[in-house]
Image 1 (cartoon, rainbow, N blue to C red):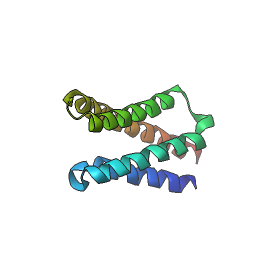
Image 2: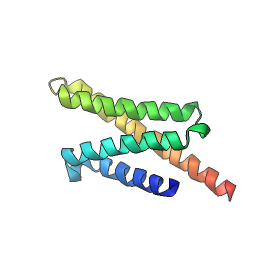
Image 3: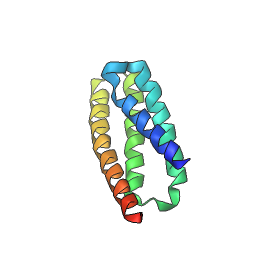
Image 4: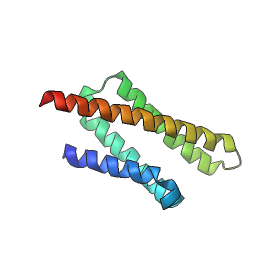
Amino acid sequence: MKKVLNYLLLISFIVTNLVPLTGIAIHKMASVFFLLLCIVHTIIYGRQMQWKRWILLTVIFISFASGLFGMILDEIPIILALHKAISIASVFFLAIHIFVFHKRLKKAK
């Protein structure tokens, strides 16, 4: 079950980042799916979460909220600029999270 969840997270993350190829509508659906999977992932791995992972989840929520408000308040371009900056930062943080997680899995074997 956890392996399927991790693969679904990866697929939804990739589809979310392919916004120039897929379009805004697919990006919105994939980002909602990614957010829901992140919440499920947090619930499953909740006992093992440290404060850094809570920050990562908070950054994902802020990115989602800024995208939502940027869509609603499209007259204010600073919100979408903030969404882009936070999204790029969250990609780097997620990459670090995945690297550390896989490193820990290799040590456990």
